[in-house]
Image 1 (spheres, one colour):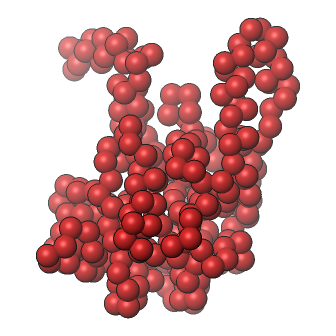
Image 2 (image 1 turned 180 degrees about the horizontal axis):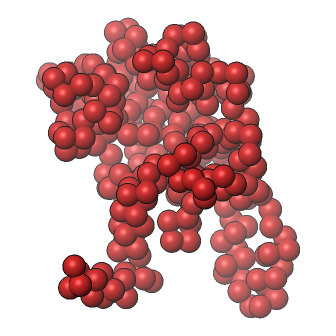
Length: 290
């Protein structure tokens, strides 16, 4: 396989479960402590050697572009106050990759396929990373690099990031079955199955290595339950070539809704040396009050 150098990250959702905050703040920019969710995803891509990051936004989400843009006034202010380290952190993110911003085509049907289809002209004959900007994996290992390694070492065009999830949550995920006698070859994929259809606890997370050929079969006229989802292409790939599952280390977190956002904030806080001890003491005091 050719070296993977591009990543596409979606930040085009309406964020209706976070209104009124998301009226003018994209859901992907709501911070988990002091870093937005999308920042974690971009950071993982950069650490994996991705050089070009394509972020798909919608009308009204220009704040995402501003976030990954230069900030000379802020940087100069920080340096004038002797906060060079903070200034370098801001500079590092926008100088570590080439950022391209694409507006999602508003004429496309609702669904995950809309963001992907909107960048089809920017992807040539190459595989690329695709992920959602409102989730993250809390781990010291680079899961983006892990997926890319699986694709390259196994000469596999399509790789799904997966984790085992509680059976009672199965209807929320795309479910993956592994072929007998293999550790990671995908036998079947079923998007958000009904309870009686569940045959595995392996859930597909919001990270993928995809081939450019996906655009040959991704059709906005083909809807699944009224939605345009790119996962509709997976069964065809499974039938004609090898698709692999990358068992992703760490904790999958999302800010897709208020409860999961709160869970993500707690998990991240407990993983950070600068806040975890004081935060633990606070949590202990609140538990006593319950």
